[in-house]
Amino acid sequence: MEDSTKHKMVSNPIILQSENLTKYILETSIYPREPETLKELRNATASHPMCFMGTAPDAGQLMALLLKLSNAKKTIEVGVYTGYSLLLTALAIPDNGKIVAVDPDRKAYEIGLPFIKKAEVEHKIEFIESPALPVLDKLLEDPWNKGTFDFAFVDADKHNYWNYHERLLELVKIGGLIIYDNTLWGGTVAWPEEDVPPPKRGIRESALAFNKAIANDSRVLISVASIGDGFTICMRAH
Ligand code: SAM
Ligand code: CA
Image (cartoon, rainbow, N blue to C red; front, side):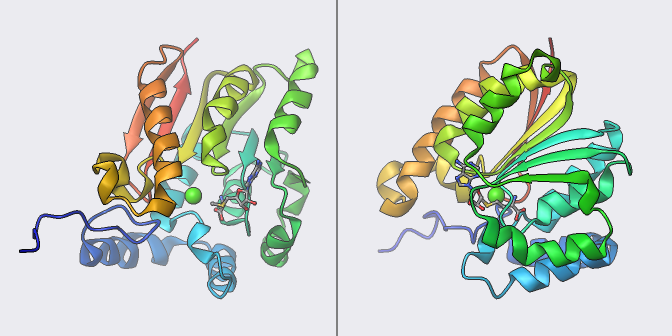
């Protein structure tokens, strides 16, 4: 007989295991407060074949709050796609704030660009079309960049999260925040491997290793928020 407690693959990027509760939260507290241009960017992304990659709007709302709370002005984004998290960051930081946004896929960025322009925040964004590691290494070559970023958001190739972490810890100031997305990977981090569909296993392995390493990293304070697909929020402690 089928085991009724068997794991359910949660539709990415919603980890909260009740679709009605997720819908309730989105409709009550998220969509009514979502800035118009962000909503438009999300809708324009919806027809894209990889639209599931956009940051979950509830996680995005938390990120906007953290950007405001931390008075973030200078930020880094690793993994832009069509720019949902980028636009929300640009809307949250002050007019003279700066975002270094890195992604090898310029075409996806250009889908969201009209909404970034409409929101009049393009001047805050330096989009760099490249894999992120060499860009972070280049930033680190200049000692003046060290400890100067207030905030970083990582939502790209999951097997490199630890490589990003080591570099971002040098770039972000003490007290600065680094957020990693998809750290619960659809809930599969808590499943036995044999129950995980084979295409999901590689990233699950990366998430397991990253989650273990970050839990043991005394350089950061952390909170693993079970929002979106899992948001690991880190503060550089020293
Ligand atoms: N944060 C985005 C949003 O809110 O819509 C979603 C990002 S999407 C999940 C992942 C992105 O990472 C893709 O656009 C992909 O091109 C990018 N990516 C993949 N490998 C990368 C790398 N080595 N460096 C930077 N970005 C990378
Ligand atoms: Ca993501």
